[in-house]
Length: 386
Image (cartoon, rainbow, N blue to C red; front, top):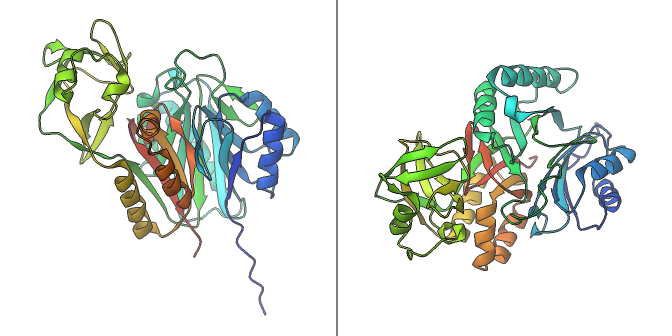
């Protein structure tokens, strides 16, 4: 009689420990297993990533990556203090990860070499022929290099789904300390950096870029902009803020970026519309967006739908496609997270996220295939074993 070994599950992690050492102890306790298991953490910014990495390393957890955030998503939904994450068992997942030391200097040749290196590592040894592959990118938001970075990596991955999030807390804490490291790889806490992870597994996966908007009918043209700084000076040849305010039917004296959160611009890329929300308004009427906006770009103002209903529909579609998820890695735009809090929707959305095993964080931008998005919930579901 042949014995069937039980399938080791993905561990979902959550801790509200006050110190890095206590948090590391709780992570290890919640994910006992092989030293080759791969751990991903999303840490609120009161933790020092270097100390956390060292504490985990001291306990034998060397295969660890992490991102810093203001809001993490864990087993009970959003939290503003503590950490969340997941651990992929080495018996079921083959994982290769590498840091990108300086994302400001990273280009297509670097992406080609990095992806080839990670693919070669996955093909070594046992489990080299696992049928499903996906990638994840954790990136420091401060250098504002995401557009070029994800375009290069997504192109080189050639159809392998990739999702990711931009780390930092500038949206919820604009006056806070920007000097701390926002990316962790092993024991190394990094700034101006990213970590690319390539994962092979037995179960199907599905990557989605979700939002609750539909495009409006009226079109506008960006007529003066600085894409490098993500600034828009003029729309349709007029002051950007004045045009945007009229398009959203808001009062003329509105000068807070949060007032525009329900009505981001939308752009069309292929058959998909992506939202482009603002981050800051300048006294002269210039608008700073969370993604690059170029001169000549055609945009429309989004029409919001019910966020809760649309999120439920997205998860229903995911289950129809791959079955019940064992894990959903979720990257939720900080502007969406803030809007949930302002409108009292967080409790209802927490219930949806928890019931679908979502772990992730509130981001300063989301990566999806070759696109740097914002105002989205970008996610990847890993199907539960059958």
